[in-house]
Amino acid sequence: MGTSLKGRKIAMLATDGFEQSELLEPRRLLEAAGAEVSVVAPGGATEIRAWHNKDWGETVFVDIALDRAKAGSYDALVLPGGVMNPDRLRLEPAAIELIKAFAKSGKPLAAICHGPWTLIDAGLVKGRKVTSWPSLRKDLENAGAYWEDREVVQDGQLITSRKPDDIPAFARTVIEALAA
Image (cartoon, rainbow, N blue to C red; front, top):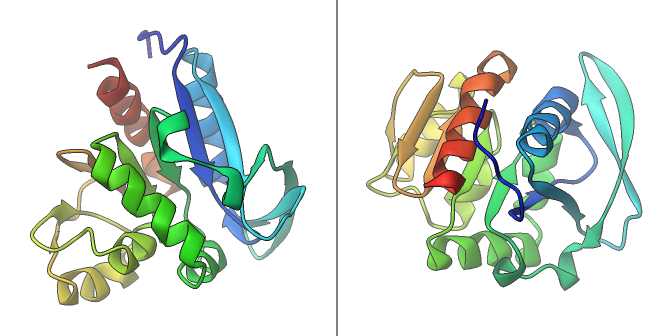
């Protein structure tokens, strides 16, 4: 991808049930660009488990507890999807507050697949262009978003993508936003 993110810090907010490829592959690409990526999770978890295809997948170590994570410590926030992951995070007030803090800071805020569910709960989609997994379209539109069927949609600091196949474009757009 060519752009250096040396010295940049990125938080990836997730919990059990994140879509394996939507955390591991963006993390790999962001780290390959030079960023330091930290997995942030609620509940004092030391590790979280991925969902892969139709069963549990890999375990990922948690770098920082959600209650200790601060938007000011990072340059961007990435929200992986999976159905269980964002559905659980929506019910975590600290997760929604962290997302709101990133929005207020103006830093890149990226969500893929089902990840935009949390953007709805944070009140961030009204009047914004977004994309997501197709089943979220009505949820996003009902929250006032303008949904588009494209591999990546950037509207200001918000970066959204539809699915695992879109990860290269998703990661490239996050990298470009951080390099700007």
